[in-house]
Image (cartoon, rainbow, N blue to C red; front, side):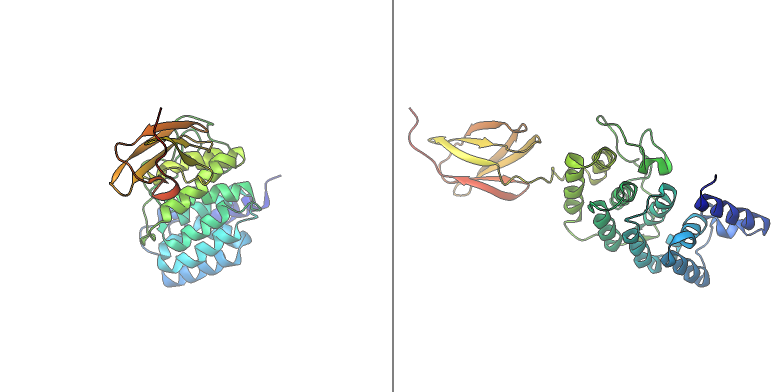
Amino acid sequence: MMPIRRATTRIVLLASLLLGAAPSAVHAQFRDDPSAAECRRWLQDLSAGGEAALDVLQFGWVAGCREEAVVPLASAIRSSRAEGDPEFLYALVKEAAQIRDERILDAALEVATANGASEPARAAAIVVLATQFGGDLDYPGVEGAALLTEPLPDEGLCGPGLSPVPRTVENPLPPGSGRRVAAAFDQLALHGPRLLRNLARCARTALGSDIPPQIDVSESSIENRCGTTYRVHNNTPLWLVYQFRVPATGESGDLPIGARLRREFTTRTEGTVELRYDGRLVDTAEPGRACR
């Protein structure tokens, strides 16, 4: 038996074709911005949820309403937590991807990190987050709504396509947005169920390589061995690049360390040594006794 939603949308499409209304109703065929009346109707239907929202997402162009669409789309993303229909969610993703705005990002971040939300809804939110930073809707090996139900590869190169989705709204994101999303992606990539873990790992590439893994390093430490020789413990499950700094002299450097491993190094100058990660102070150590 055909699912009720799919049957409804096909009936709507058939009716549109019979009435000759397809050019103004099908998203792919839009040429001009929707009228004020269309926007009012579409946004009302989107807010109503259910079949009305599905129909407008599949046969309207909500993102074409520009700034008027931002809040309703953000609300629709938040309301999608319990949604399990990948076709509905992917239609929502395609509209939200056309708008870059802090409110879309915040809504998607809430759903992506909500443990009680459905996996397809969280997957959709991950894709929306990637598009906020220039990611496309194309991921190698998985197309369309299947992206929200079929896991991507466990390892190897992946990530969204390189051609960003054309936007109808382009509002700057606040400073630190990339790190907020990276923290969510990195947590999911470490501890999420397979669908979300692999999607978050792949979507992470949309953030670029300038943001290191956002992980709790509070258990990492530095200790003095003797003189100006120190040992750093990376007590995390990831290979990370720490930094050391001697504030009194300005000496500094990088310390790449494998997961749950330690590394020794010697400073050229003497003074308190700071251990830092991604600009944050992790621990300090003082120079010690003479080495034998």
